[in-house]
Image (cartoon, rainbow, N blue to C red; front, side, top):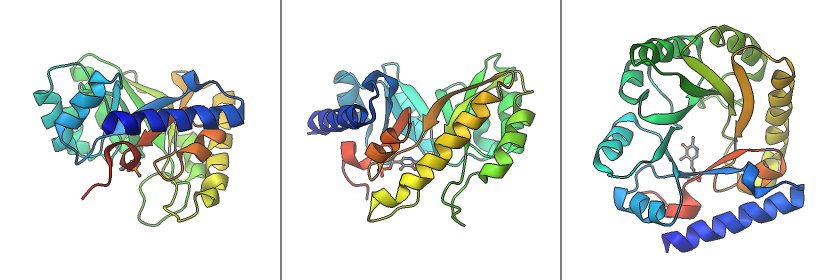
Length: 227
Ligand SMILES: *Cc1c(COP(=O)(O)O)cnc(C)c1O
Protein backbone atom coordinates (compact mmCIF):
# COMPACT_ATOMS: atom_id res chain seq x y z
CA UNK A 1 0.00 0.00 0.00
CA UNK A 2 2.76 2.46 0.96
CA UNK A 3 4.74 1.57 -2.14
CA UNK A 4 1.63 2.12 -4.27
CA UNK A 5 1.05 5.52 -2.68
CA UNK A 6 4.66 6.50 -3.28
CA UNK A 7 4.42 5.45 -6.90
CA UNK A 8 1.23 7.43 -7.39
CA UNK A 9 2.74 10.57 -5.84
CA UNK A 10 5.78 10.25 -8.07
CA UNK A 11 3.56 9.92 -11.12
CA UNK A 12 1.67 13.04 -10.15
CA UNK A 13 4.95 14.89 -9.63
CA UNK A 14 6.02 13.80 -13.11
CA UNK A 15 2.74 15.03 -14.60
CA UNK A 16 3.01 18.38 -12.86
CA UNK A 17 6.54 18.70 -14.21
CA UNK A 18 5.31 17.89 -17.68
CA UNK A 19 2.67 20.62 -17.49
CA UNK A 20 5.29 23.11 -16.35
CA UNK A 21 7.97 22.03 -18.84
CA UNK A 22 10.24 20.87 -16.04
CA UNK A 23 12.29 17.74 -15.49
CA UNK A 24 11.20 15.50 -12.57
CA UNK A 25 14.85 15.19 -11.57
CA UNK A 26 14.62 18.84 -10.41
CA UNK A 27 12.19 17.83 -7.64
CA UNK A 28 13.18 16.22 -4.34
CA UNK A 29 10.38 14.37 -2.60
CA UNK A 30 10.54 14.52 1.19
CA UNK A 31 8.25 11.86 2.66
CA UNK A 32 6.84 13.33 5.89
CA UNK A 33 6.85 10.45 8.37
CA UNK A 34 5.83 12.35 11.53
CA UNK A 35 3.59 10.30 13.83
CA UNK A 36 4.11 7.26 11.64
CA UNK A 37 5.97 4.13 12.76
CA UNK A 38 9.54 3.44 11.82
CA UNK A 39 8.43 0.30 10.00
CA UNK A 40 6.74 2.57 7.43
CA UNK A 41 10.03 4.37 6.85
CA UNK A 42 11.82 1.05 6.48
CA UNK A 43 9.28 -0.12 3.91
CA UNK A 44 9.76 2.99 1.81
CA UNK A 45 13.53 2.97 2.15
CA UNK A 46 13.36 -0.51 0.69
CA UNK A 47 11.28 0.96 -2.15
CA UNK A 48 14.03 3.48 -2.87
CA UNK A 49 12.75 6.63 -1.11
CA UNK A 50 15.77 8.31 0.58
CA UNK A 51 14.43 11.57 2.15
CA UNK A 52 12.14 11.82 5.21
CA UNK A 53 10.75 14.81 7.09
CA UNK A 54 10.00 15.02 10.82
CA UNK A 55 8.43 17.81 12.87
CA UNK A 56 9.38 16.89 16.41
CA UNK A 57 12.93 16.68 17.75
CA UNK A 58 12.23 13.80 20.10
CA UNK A 59 10.56 11.69 17.44
CA UNK A 60 13.33 12.43 14.96
CA UNK A 61 16.04 11.42 17.45
CA UNK A 62 14.22 8.24 18.36
CA UNK A 63 13.82 7.18 14.74
CA UNK A 64 17.41 8.18 14.03
CA UNK A 65 18.65 5.90 16.83
CA UNK A 66 16.47 2.96 15.97
CA UNK A 67 16.92 2.72 12.23
CA UNK A 68 19.83 0.64 11.01
CA UNK A 69 20.11 2.10 7.52
CA UNK A 70 21.22 5.59 6.54
CA UNK A 71 18.32 8.01 6.10
CA UNK A 72 18.33 11.57 4.83
CA UNK A 73 16.37 13.22 7.66
CA UNK A 74 14.88 16.70 7.27
CA UNK A 75 13.74 18.83 10.20
CA UNK A 76 10.60 20.53 8.91
CA UNK A 77 8.85 21.56 12.13
CA UNK A 78 9.29 24.56 14.38
CA UNK A 79 12.64 24.28 16.15
CA UNK A 80 13.40 25.65 19.60
CA UNK A 81 16.92 26.91 20.22
CA UNK A 82 17.45 24.59 23.20
CA UNK A 83 16.78 21.55 20.98
CA UNK A 84 19.21 22.43 18.19
CA UNK A 85 22.01 20.44 19.80
CA UNK A 86 20.08 17.19 19.48
CA UNK A 87 19.56 17.32 15.73
CA UNK A 88 22.29 19.42 14.15
CA UNK A 89 24.41 16.38 13.28
CA UNK A 90 21.45 14.13 12.40
CA UNK A 91 19.68 16.01 9.61
CA UNK A 92 20.67 16.91 6.05
CA UNK A 93 18.55 20.05 6.07
CA UNK A 94 16.69 22.24 8.59
CA UNK A 95 13.72 23.78 6.75
CA UNK A 96 12.33 25.94 9.54
CA UNK A 97 14.79 28.73 10.37
CA UNK A 98 12.91 31.95 10.95
CA UNK A 99 15.19 34.05 13.14
CA UNK A 100 18.81 35.14 13.47
CA UNK A 101 18.58 33.95 17.06
CA UNK A 102 17.87 30.37 15.96
CA UNK A 103 20.53 30.51 13.23
CA UNK A 104 23.07 31.71 15.78
CA UNK A 105 22.35 28.67 17.93
CA UNK A 106 22.72 26.39 14.90
CA UNK A 107 26.06 28.11 14.19
CA UNK A 108 27.19 27.44 17.75
CA UNK A 109 26.24 23.77 17.79
CA UNK A 110 27.50 23.11 14.25
CA UNK A 111 30.84 24.70 15.15
CA UNK A 112 31.15 22.44 18.20
CA UNK A 113 30.67 19.41 15.97
CA UNK A 114 32.88 20.84 13.25
CA UNK A 115 30.24 20.68 10.52
CA UNK A 116 28.31 23.03 8.27
CA UNK A 117 24.55 22.93 8.77
CA UNK A 118 22.34 23.33 5.71
CA UNK A 119 19.25 25.44 6.34
CA UNK A 120 16.26 26.98 4.62
CA UNK A 121 14.68 30.26 5.62
CA UNK A 122 11.01 29.81 6.46
CA UNK A 123 8.71 32.47 5.06
CA UNK A 124 5.14 33.07 6.22
CA UNK A 125 3.57 33.42 2.79
CA UNK A 126 -0.05 33.30 3.86
CA UNK A 127 0.38 35.99 6.57
CA UNK A 128 -1.23 33.62 9.03
CA UNK A 129 -1.15 34.65 12.67
CA UNK A 130 -0.51 31.15 13.92
CA UNK A 131 2.13 30.10 11.41
CA UNK A 132 5.81 30.48 12.06
CA UNK A 133 8.06 32.15 9.53
CA UNK A 134 9.26 35.55 8.50
CA UNK A 135 7.38 38.10 6.52
CA UNK A 136 8.85 38.28 3.02
CA UNK A 137 10.03 41.88 3.56
CA UNK A 138 12.23 40.79 6.45
CA UNK A 139 13.86 37.90 4.61
CA UNK A 140 16.66 39.67 2.78
CA UNK A 141 18.02 41.44 5.86
CA UNK A 142 17.91 38.27 7.87
CA UNK A 143 19.62 36.28 5.14
CA UNK A 144 22.42 38.84 5.00
CA UNK A 145 22.90 38.48 8.76
CA UNK A 146 22.87 34.69 8.75
CA UNK A 147 25.18 34.49 5.74
CA UNK A 148 27.99 35.67 8.03
CA UNK A 149 27.87 32.47 10.07
CA UNK A 150 30.62 30.12 8.82
CA UNK A 151 28.97 26.89 10.05
CA UNK A 152 25.56 27.64 8.57
CA UNK A 153 24.76 27.50 4.89
CA UNK A 154 21.53 28.95 3.54
CA UNK A 155 20.34 26.72 0.71
CA UNK A 156 16.96 28.28 -0.07
CA UNK A 157 13.48 29.08 1.18
CA UNK A 158 10.62 27.11 2.69
CA UNK A 159 6.95 27.84 3.24
CA UNK A 160 3.62 26.21 3.95
CA UNK A 161 0.56 27.68 2.28
CA UNK A 162 -2.68 27.95 4.23
CA UNK A 163 -4.90 24.90 4.32
CA UNK A 164 -7.75 25.40 1.90
CA UNK A 165 -10.42 23.21 0.32
CA UNK A 166 -9.41 24.64 -3.04
CA UNK A 167 -5.62 24.43 -3.46
CA UNK A 168 -5.81 26.61 -6.57
CA UNK A 169 -6.18 29.47 -4.07
CA UNK A 170 -2.60 28.84 -2.98
CA UNK A 171 -1.10 29.38 -6.41
CA UNK A 172 -0.58 33.09 -5.77
CA UNK A 173 1.39 32.35 -2.59
CA UNK A 174 3.65 29.94 -4.42
CA UNK A 175 4.19 32.51 -7.16
CA UNK A 176 5.10 35.14 -4.59
CA UNK A 177 7.58 32.86 -2.85
CA UNK A 178 9.15 31.89 -6.16
CA UNK A 179 9.60 35.57 -7.03
CA UNK A 180 11.24 36.23 -3.67
CA UNK A 181 13.49 33.21 -4.24
CA UNK A 182 14.63 34.56 -7.62
CA UNK A 183 15.08 38.11 -6.27
CA UNK A 184 17.32 36.88 -3.47
CA UNK A 185 19.23 34.57 -5.81
CA UNK A 186 20.00 37.51 -8.08
CA UNK A 187 21.67 39.33 -5.19
CA UNK A 188 24.44 36.70 -5.24
CA UNK A 189 25.08 36.93 -1.51
CA UNK A 190 28.30 35.27 -0.33
CA UNK A 191 27.77 31.96 1.46
CA UNK A 192 24.14 31.74 0.26
CA UNK A 193 22.94 29.23 -2.36
CA UNK A 194 19.37 29.92 -3.46
CA UNK A 195 18.75 26.53 -5.01
CA UNK A 196 16.09 24.84 -2.87
CA UNK A 197 12.50 26.02 -2.84
CA UNK A 198 10.62 23.81 -0.35
CA UNK A 199 6.88 24.27 -0.86
CA UNK A 200 3.88 22.04 -1.50
CA UNK A 201 2.22 19.41 0.70
CA UNK A 202 -0.38 16.68 0.04
CA UNK A 203 -3.08 19.18 -0.72
CA UNK A 204 -1.20 21.46 -3.10
CA UNK A 205 2.12 19.97 -4.25
CA UNK A 206 1.21 19.79 -7.91
CA UNK A 207 0.46 23.50 -7.98
CA UNK A 208 3.65 24.22 -6.04
CA UNK A 209 5.65 22.31 -8.66
CA UNK A 210 3.96 24.20 -11.48
CA UNK A 211 5.07 27.38 -9.69
CA UNK A 212 8.71 26.42 -9.19
CA UNK A 213 9.06 24.19 -6.11
CA UNK A 214 12.24 22.11 -6.10
CA UNK A 215 11.31 20.20 -2.93
CA UNK A 216 7.88 18.98 -1.83
CA UNK A 217 6.99 17.68 1.64
CA UNK A 218 4.32 15.02 1.47
CA UNK A 219 2.88 13.08 4.38
CA UNK A 220 -0.78 12.11 4.07
CA UNK A 221 -0.71 11.13 0.39
CA UNK A 222 2.05 8.62 1.13
CA UNK A 223 1.46 7.40 4.69
CA UNK A 224 -2.29 7.98 5.04
CA UNK A 225 -4.00 10.27 7.53
CA UNK A 226 -2.37 10.97 10.90
CA UNK A 227 -4.37 10.45 14.08
C1 LIG B 1 2.95 17.72 8.35
C2 LIG B 1 3.71 18.60 7.44
C3 LIG B 1 3.81 18.34 6.06
C4 LIG B 1 3.08 17.20 5.38
O1 LIG B 1 1.71 17.47 5.35
P1 LIG B 1 0.66 16.56 4.51
O2 LIG B 1 -0.49 17.45 4.31
O3 LIG B 1 0.37 15.38 5.36
O4 LIG B 1 1.32 16.18 3.24
C5 LIG B 1 4.61 19.17 5.29
N1 LIG B 1 5.26 20.22 5.84
C6 LIG B 1 5.17 20.52 7.14
C7 LIG B 1 5.92 21.69 7.67
C8 LIG B 1 4.40 19.72 7.99
O5 LIG B 1 4.30 20.05 9.27
